[in-house]
Each structure stands twice: as structure tokens, then as C-alpha cells.
Length: 498
Image (cartoon, rainbow, N blue to C red; front, top):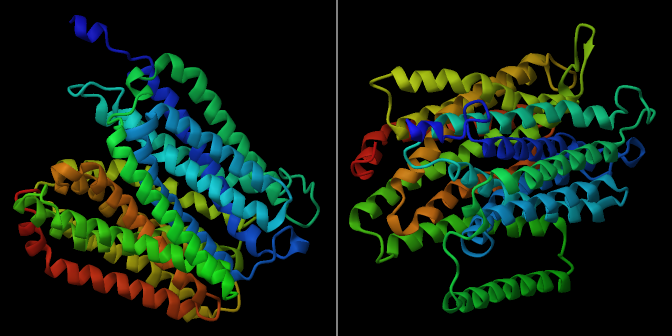
């Protein structure tokens, strides 16, 4: 009885600190997805329309590698929180960097400001995103039954910010509905709104955090010892030196350009998870049953990378289709191409309770590999659907916006089969000695998928639209079917994990 009385239920039955983290992450996602909704257009629109005038293929490739870098940096952000700063300070530093990144974009300083903002937002998001989630768990005792519902509310906050932003930021860029900027887009006004959103998130986090967040978040979980620090510094310096040498050689050969930098990042994003797998499989700290589980995780990792390459294309290929090939009105209701970015979080919010109920009541449901297989098929079908408008009507004119709505709906069914299941199975298959690194692998699957995307989006245009959607869609479906035939084998390698 006394235990119940002492429970903090100030935020809809949840701890008051959940409100702090809910709104912090909501505003961070507002700023990130708002920026993402218009960034591609800013890069390739002509200067006379308010853009930077980049070529479309380069802009699309930058957009994809941007997403890859965000997930790569999450690995570093988790390590800094655990070993150096503690989660509360790490999140604050990340939020400040994100805000300054958006401020850089809001200034009319051209390509230089773009690259500065990418560096700031990539590092900032990597520091903030994984550690806010970790702090949510710190609000609850191990036996607190409100934990799952608390995380559900937190995820709703993430998607709420992501859903509102693709309407609010383009609206600001278009003159708040008053055509304040004539016929051109004032992208800087939109980026300013994203910066303001992150400022509100930081304000909420700072004022409320002192009162309502766990004091444990002020300290690192596993503080680094002086003996451990030296080899880390040495290897970091070696890595930086190698990178400087590579960039120096490229500069000397006259090849230091954005295309080659994207190629380097792609190589790192693919090589890093390969290194992690080799390290875990050869480690003496990993038992034989654990090695079997790591081997079982490899096809699931590849499946996740293929899925994220398609799912994350919403801000790249589907954004181009929305702007160039879609009728941007339904009757008298007119909207912007950037508004389609709201479909991802909107469908997640709609589908999540449906799938939670499904898994709760389906007794003979498929195993994790079976769900991954089905998820890949759905992802592929979402792209196959996008090939039909070009096949039916040609690729010169504009088509109904409902093609995009249908494609997003189908791929989000795939996400329900892969994303939450992947998070769960990653924690279950992780070797005891590499639990944190294994969770990093889940982020690296998204990073690797988007890095591959950065290479293939260069080949998308209205002229290549039909074969592009068909080939990528078929690859996903074929891999999903192949995975289906190996479900029992993978499940046996999971060694007792369901």
C-alpha cells in the first residue's frame, strides 16, 4: 500500500520525468523531420527559387548519406554517455549542437552553412537520440509494470513531433500562408522554425530535468578508467590520422569532392558492422551458444539493412516523386510535396496499436526471422506499387497523390514487422560481453542501408523511375522469400531464443 502511494503518477499515471523526456524528444524530432522535409528541395532547387542549385543526383546522395551518418554517430553517442559524461549531460550537449546546426541552415551562407549544419546535427543527434531513450528506462524500477506503457507514450511523442513538422516547417518556408516571399521558397525561414523547435526542447529539458529526472543520469554507467583511456586515445588518433591521409591524397590528386567523401562514408558504414561481427565471433568472451546466436543475427542484419534502404527513401526518392510527379492537390485542397513526409509517423501511430493487439492475441505467430521475411516482402511491394504509375501513364506527367499514400502505408506494415521485432531480438541474441555493442549493430543496420542508398539514388530520375522502383522492389522481395526458406535454420541457430 505505501509503495503505491509513493509512486510518481503526475504525468497521466506515469512519472513526471516522462513529461520532460516526452517533450524533449518531441521537439527534437520536430526539428529533425522538419529540416528533413525541405532539405532535399533546398539543395537542388535553382538559386532563383531560393535553393543551392545542386544537381539532383548529388543532392539525393547527400540526403541518404546524411541519414547514414546520424546512425553511425549514435554508436559514439552511446559510448560517451556510458563512459564519460552520463546521459543527462550528453543529451544536453547534443541538443545544443542540433540547435546550432539548424541556426547555421537558417543563415543565407550557401553550401558552407549546409556542410557545417550537417556536421553539427549529425553529432548532436548521435549524442541525444540513443540517450534520451535510455533515460526513459531510468525513470522506472525493474518491477514497475508501467514501463511498457511509459515507453509507448514516449514513442507517441517521437511520432507526434515527426508528424507535425512536415506541415509546420514547409508552411514557414512558404511565407506562413501569406506568400511573404513572392514565388520563391524562403528555406531559411523554415530552418529557423526547426531551430526554434529544438530551443523549446532544450528549455523544457533544462528547467524540468533538474527536478524530475533521475540523479543517476548525471553520472556515466561505466566510467572509463585511466588505464583504459590511453589505448582509446591512441586508436582515435590513428583513425583520425588515416582519415587525414586519405583526404590529403584525394586533395593531391584533385579528387577531394563530395562524391568521394560519400564513397568513404559508405565504405565505413558497411565495414564497421562487418568488423563488429568478426570481433564478436572471434572473442573468447563469447560462448559457443552465443556465437551461434550471433551467426543467426547476420541474415537478420542484412534484411534490416535492405528494409531501411527502402523505408528511409521517403525523404529522398519518394520526396522527388512527390515534388516532380505528383498532383499536389485533392479537389480544392492544395498542399506541398514536403507534407508527404508526415505519412511515415502518422501510419506508425495508426498501426502500432493494431500490431500490439495482434502479437498479444496470435498464439501461433511467426518467429522473428519469419516476421523479417514478411517485412521485406511488404517493403518490396511498396516499391513495386510505385512502378505502376509510370507503367500505366508514362513518366512525363503528374499522377494521383494516393500512389504515395499507398506506398507509405505498405512499407509501414513492413516496419511494424521489422523495427520493434528487430529491437527485441537484438537484445535477446546479444552476447553478455557485448550487449551495448549489439544494440549499436541495430543502428548500424540502418546506417548501412542508407549508405547503400546514397550510391543507388544517383540513378533515380523520371526517365529511370519504373526500372528503379521495380529492381529495388524485386531485390527486397527475393531476399524476403530466400529468408523464408531459412527461417527454421536461423531459428535453430538462435539456440533457445524465440
